Image 1 (tube, rainbow, N blue to C red):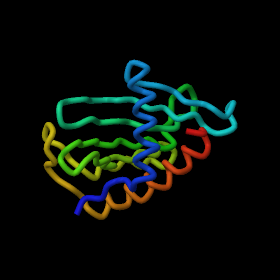
Image 2: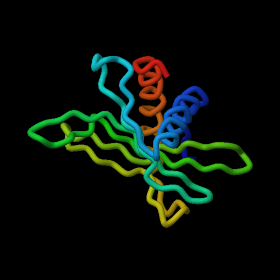
Image 3: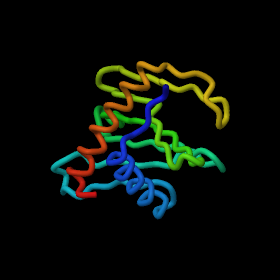
Image 4: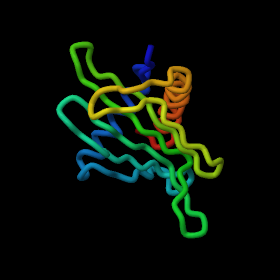
Length: 136
């Protein structure tokens, strides 16, 4: 079974997406004067039944932006409510790039269940950290 963000993480995620949507679909949030890495939020795709969102911390190394990390999420609204599904994780300094859900348009074509569960566990913790760090 595919995992979704827990209720607390979903609340934080939804606030991040609202801020991005109010700012032409992307925003860099830094409420800490550089004490913590800013969080970048971008709505990368939006259709009737599915929204895809990238959330990332970036730093610069030799002129390149490095993801530390970047995660992508699919948001589905249906009769069960809003489901936030983590499906992509990238950590540039470790050379990690993992996609746990493969899409064919709006439908799920393939799911790596263990990896997707790991992505969700990390994302639940990460949203808690972002909420605390950025006072969201």
